Each structure stands twice: as C-alpha cells, then as structure tokens.
Length: 414
Image 1 (tube, rainbow, N blue to C red):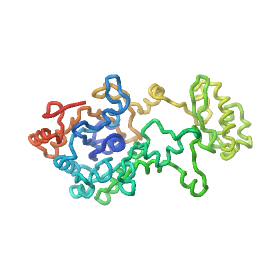
Image 2 (image 1 turned 90 degrees about the vertical axis):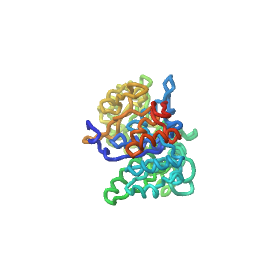
Image 3 (image 1 turned 60 degrees about the horizontal axis):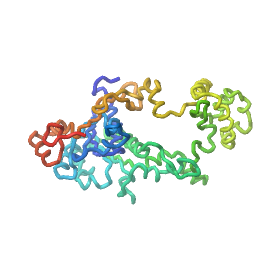
Image 4 (image 1 turned 60 degrees about the vertical axis):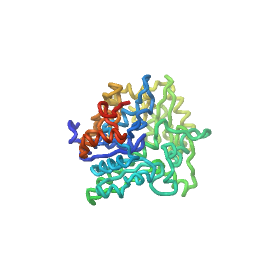
C-alpha cells in the first residue's frame, strides 16, 4: 500500500468540487480515494447540507458526512458574488478537474462556464452531474436521484407485482451518475494526454440509470416484452431466489446455469432433478420457476443459514447469506478485504467506514484525511497558494465572501 501521497495513482490531479449533497460530492470522493487533491468549495453560510444529512447519533451530528467528505479540503467561497466568482475562476485556473452538480446554466451565470474557464485553463476537464443532462427539453428542470430512477426505468421494475414501484434503500441514481461521472473524468484526462485540452463530461442521473438496464429496450422493441415488477426473482432465470432457513434467516441461492443446477440437485439429495425434462435447460427451469422455488424452499428450511452457506458453497453452487448492516459489520471477511476500515473522525472518534473500491494491487487508494468538520478549514491555506494575501483574505472574510476557521475574522464550525 502506498505510504505517501505521491505514490497514489491520481496524486498529480487537482479537483475543484463545487457540488453539494451527493451526486457531485460522491464523484469527488471516488477521485479523492485514489489520491486526487480534492478542494471542496462550500457555501460560507452553512456549508454542504450533507453535513446535516443521514442518521444522527443522539447528539445530532451526521454520520454520512464522514464518508462523502473524506480526502477533501474545505474551502469557503460565496460564488453568488463577483469576488467569489473571481476566486472560483482562479481555483479553476489551477485545477485539472472541476466537478459541479448545479442546474445547467448556473456556472455560466456566475461567469464560470466551461468556455470561460477554458480561457484561463484550456486543459481543465469540467465534469457536470445533473438530473437530465446539459441539453434537451428537460435540462432546465431540477432533478434528484429519485427522479432519475423513475425516468431511467429502474423504479418501474423494482418491487412486488401487486404494489406500487419501490426503491432501493440507498440513493442509487445519485451514486450511479457520480460513478459514471468519475469514469468520464478519467477518460477525459486520458484524452487530454493526447489532445492537450480539457472537455465537458456530462453525466445525467436518468441516463446513468438507463445504462444499467441491460436488455430492457431491445426486449420491448424486438420481442414486444415489457419487464414488470417481479419481487425477488427475475422471470425465466431460475432458480435464483432468497430461501428460508431453519433459524428464520434468509439465504440467496443462484443455480440458473445448467451445470450449477445439477450440482444443486445433487447436494439436495435429488440428483434426478438435474435430468428432469422440466428443469433440464435454462428455458425449462424458467418455465417451472415456481415449482423449483417450492422444492428448494422445502429443502433449505431444514438447515440454518450458516449450514446452508457452507454446504451449498462447498458443492460449487452460488450461494450467500442476505446481510444486514449488523452482519456486514460483524463479518471478518469485510475487514480482511479492507472493505471496512477503522478511521478516526474529528467528531465521532474511531469509526468503521466503507473502504476504497476497486482494489488496485500496485497503487491502491487510501483514506488519508478525515472529513473536515470545520467549514472552511483549508480556506486560508488553499487561497494563500493562489496568491491571496492575509490582508485580502481578512477583507473577504469581513465581507462574507469566505469563512475562515476558528480564530479567523468570522470563523466557525459545525
């Protein structure tokens, strides 16, 4: 594992993050995890609202902020003012990447649109995450992740057939758009190595969701088949479901490939099922999905989840328990893979946070810096690097353009 900043794969990349809430900041988090210097620009009045989001401990402080704000510096700047816009331009002039998730046109109104920034820094990659993209009739609309999930198609197929569309228990649309934004950013940086110029990365939430939807559209266009909500199964993919256990737990068994199903039939003590004409091929099993689930449920419920996990996996069949947060936390496997990392937070102290993914064997990412709880903790240092003098900084602080850390003219922390 790298023992210094320079050994990290993105250590030569400076990112200015202007976004707030989740879609833009998660993109910044992904880049920061692999070594990019991420300068998070926050509103001096209150900082990023994510500081207040998520389940709180009894004393009322977010448990989400330590994850999404790790590996970032906090700089305050009121971009709605001429002075703040000048500072934003100077920051963009020193950066490799600018990430934002405002409505289209916002940066342009502030004099910080791509064309304006490229006059200062033609190598800048401008990564823009929005609900509907930078063009098209819906571009001006406000868009959260939930709207992107609805329009992108995933809400329609999620849930039970006799109920309204459901949602995943996470901000899936935002996370997908941010992940595609990070991918696009790296592609644009690679292209810049050949062209010498930056470009716009346009990541829309509904488009990122649609990109996840497999063969949904060809099935409709060419076969007249529309996917519907089917609960815990995919139609015609069997067996692949969650099954009950003797201890009241759940376990997922996926044996929808021919050879894997035959192995499952053997471990069930029913090898003849592997040659049964009703279950012989992928298509046959799909036609008799309900019957298969009945047979497997009757067998699975004789064992505990731990027993099933062991014997089914030992037979070479795909199988895993359905983990809750408590299960993940208590599983040594997640720690061995560094998917759970003990991390010291400025407010919460020692806490377990999600590790960095994906894993690189030569230049893996790391969590190097805890989230900044003091709004503007790095304002003086970062702006000082731009040539902003102490006197100018004090004047900006008195005018509310920036907020300095405790001890500065207007400093404060959450």
